[in-house]
Image (cartoon, rainbow, N blue to C red):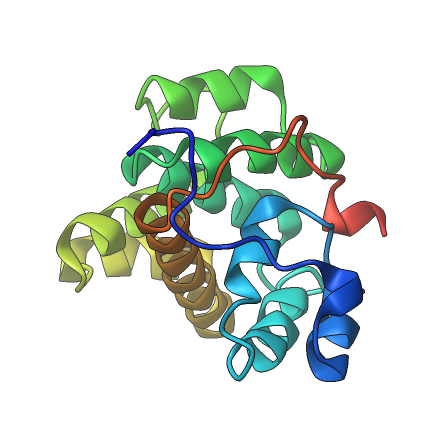
Length: 183
């Protein structure tokens, strides 16, 4: 099989069932979402959940997007990494911060104590599923319990998205889609 060929069909938004068409309108038209829409029963409620991550949370958008980039990098998911650089820039994440995540330096000086704690939390969650007591305590010093719960939603959602993109071999879009924050 050609590594550039996707395993899953890319659903045409115009020929999708009504409830799937409505879901397409809530996120950028990119290959990942077109492939995910093949699960017509699950896609609409999933989009509702995913779109919720782009609403105002207690977890600030920069911390959230840094965690998403880290999940993409740790999952070796080029699709999520590439798309979320666009989204990260849209919320003010610097190229220096992106480069630090890319090289695996989550304690770089360009990150605040809050960012470092959230990144350590996200990394421990991805690598070990259950975050250690020490990592949790460090995160709890920087983030409220609500923000930690939101961070768990973000990390878990993007772990699933990375697995979908990689296992489905979703082909890269010609260029990344726009940031959902810009909508």
